[in-house]
Image (cartoon, rainbow, N blue to C red; front, side):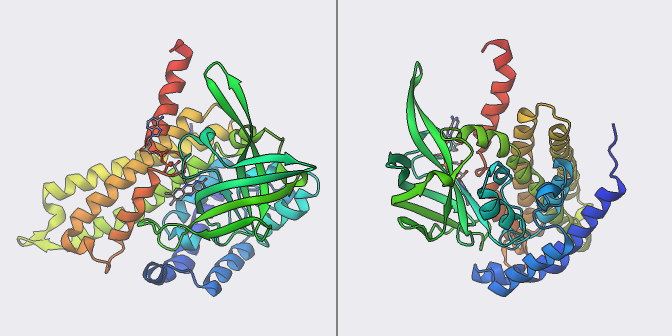
Length: 386
Ligand SMILES: Cc1cc2nc3c(=O)[nH]c(=O)nc-3n(C[C@H](O)[C@H](O)[C@H](O)COP(=O)(O)OP(=O)(O)OC[C@H]3O[C@@H](n4cnc5c(N)ncnc54)[C@H](O)[C@@H]3O)c2cc1C
């Protein structure tokens, strides 16, 4: 076993850390205040990421990416997690699922996404179907040579900036002994397609400026050329490519927790009450000890799950453990840091209240904590026949 980083991995971490500190941190307060990422700021972050060779670093070199493996990409995401989600969205990491593009889809979607010319988003969730993806109602029906789509998706992150969206849609239903089961197909849907509308979503307390949108399909016609992967093969592409996205949530949680912790640590060393630094009181110092222990634990758990993917080892349970542990650790660390800051922790003079708010969504998106626990326990019990 080797817990150290290679020279190249150290370079990746240092480069992305410096980028986040220089290009993201300076704009955070304004995005937080306005809820908007100014267009010129977004364009600058994107261009500098391209210049650095990090745009689409999660894609293989054969299609123009940086060819990072899962572990290296986790290191990138960990550093990005320190900064605002709304801003680091433009440090583009297109959905890995685009590697399923075939034929002319490669020129129309995959390559422009990797080159930063077109941005993507991914849509599964519906008002009536969240954790239960197969409960989706948005459906595509055959009509002549086309598909006709009707339905609604909501909570779709980044769809406000997307040129096209990868949308999972029901294309049929099978009767099984356990009841009807939807067949699902992934479609590539261009902004501006007739019958397809992207409208503002809800206001979230987490990640201001990183907007979620509502997608509406009203008799939207799509040809077969827009199918990503196989018809009815949506779950196959989902499992092959989306499996790893939960690592992103975990690694970002670790990065943000370290940033927040460092602020709490410094505050505990500087703030004096009763004639001494508050960090000298065991009630505070033991909190710091618990926080750093949990952050390290989440870090190792997360990197180990990414490493397993690189080794071709089963990693579903490990990724679920990393996602649930890191996201819940972030909640505890941001809450404890806020407590160390006392009343000032709640004021927007410091970013602590933002970290605390932002942390809340991590236990919900990309599969809630309950769904991750379901995955973990299922993997443990299934081999025993339960
Ligand atoms: C800000 C934001 C951005 C998002 N971005 C995207 C996006 O870009 N694309 C996309 O497709 N989706 C996105 N999502 C959707 C996200 O993945 C869902 O919110 C999540 O999967 C949960 O679905 P739900 O909110 O409908 O909750 P529900 O599924 O309705 O769950 C409600 C509660 O019931 C619990 N529950 C449900 N089923 C079970 C079960 N079997 N066992 C135990 N407990 C259960 C849940 O854990 C939860 O506590 C986003 C969500 C948010 C909030």
